[in-house]
Each structure stands twice: as structure tokens, then as C-alpha cells.
Image (cartoon, rainbow, N blue to C red; front, side):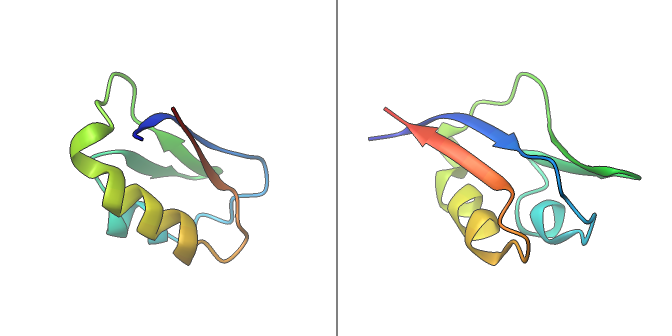
Length: 65
């Protein structure tokens, strides 16, 4: 099973955990984090899971196939 979709829901507090954990996928903006467009998630699946687990407001989500 692999991650096929990643998103950040409303409520991100811009704490930088996502970008610090996986800068290849996440970018923190003034008002929340975004998923970088066009990223292949395969090489970063472990780091995406780590970022989601570490998120203090639990807004990093992903979908697996």
C-alpha cells in the first residue's frame, strides 16, 4: 500500500513540524501549510506519516491505495 494523496485540513497553526519533518512535501505559509504541487509521495511515505503523527492539531491527512 502506498500513499496516493496528501492534504492539510483547515486549522493548521503553522508550527513548522510538517516542513521540518518532510520539506520535500510540505511548505509552511503564513496561514497554514500546503502540500507542494507535483510531488511524488512514494520516496517520502515514512516522513509523511511522521509529520502526520507529530502534528499537534492533527490536520495532516493522507490516503493510501
